[in-house]
Image 1 (cartoon, rainbow, N blue to C red):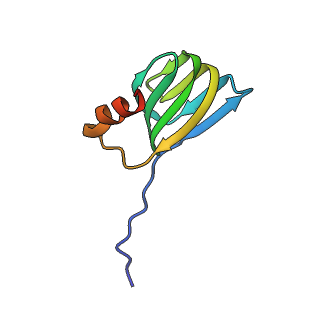
Image 2 (tube, rainbow, N blue to C red):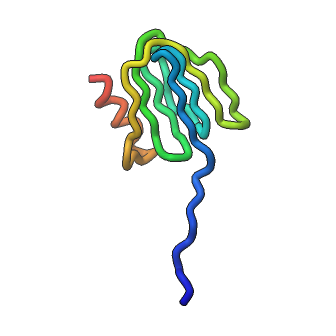
Length: 96
């Protein structure tokens, strides 16, 4: 009996947080927006919203999808069901 299900591969995705002040991520496809308090990124596993204080990019490797961010990490969350065309409305809700 053959199965019609296909294996889905998302690629490698890893997050490392050191002392709440250095965040290393792999599998990042795109940084949609960022400032010193918030990063919105598209990863192999979905959209990621990172919030903090004095955030800044330390290293950005667009070829391998690696990002290092320093600053005080306050929260880190995956955002489900975020469609690209609704990205702007989500951001406007977050900044209210």
